Image 1 (cartoon, rainbow, N blue to C red):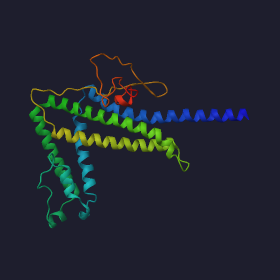
Image 2: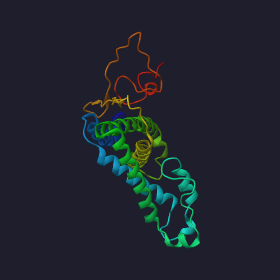
Image 3: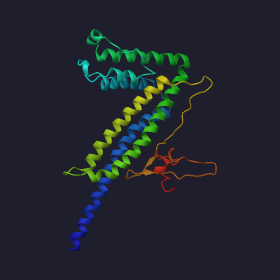
Image 4: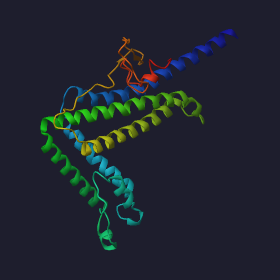
Length: 264
């Protein structure tokens, strides 16, 4: 009957609205985690301890990838580890052990050696540039790295959201799948931020006459009551030219081609 058909349509519309809100909730939780880190930088807080923690955790994670077992040395990829850190934490003749040395060494020994080298480089940089410039350099590198990966993550989450219903087979809830896969992607993004920040902090060189400048690449955006992003109007001038891969000037945190420039 018409009444039953209308009831089914209303139930379907309700389910769609509910799913939209749940999808938005996943993204909002991730946004809160990222913006809490960004706000520390934008407020000029000292992030040295956070950076040091990233370096140490990055080294430990990388060593566990290349040295998969602490006691089964035949599974170690020493050459891969040396190549990974070539040019910043390892030299050509590093980690070349004879049979007896390899038998005696542990993965924790290598982690400790790499961490000690990293901290020595870090301390030397701070002594060279001075404490004030080093603190600002930490904020600049962390902010730009977070913003770059966050914008890509927004694009990836949009693609996941558009295609998640196609994979909702076997009575699996698409919202649950989106949440699980979305946070796996988020964890991968955080690991990439940590690794890139560690590498940049240990390899960056700046000229003494230049000072690192913090720029708010992807600004925090307002959120409406339904959890969707509120874009600010863009005032274009003749001199303003936005590249398609640049952050959108509306402050959404997305790339221009995925936001206000999508119709161009």
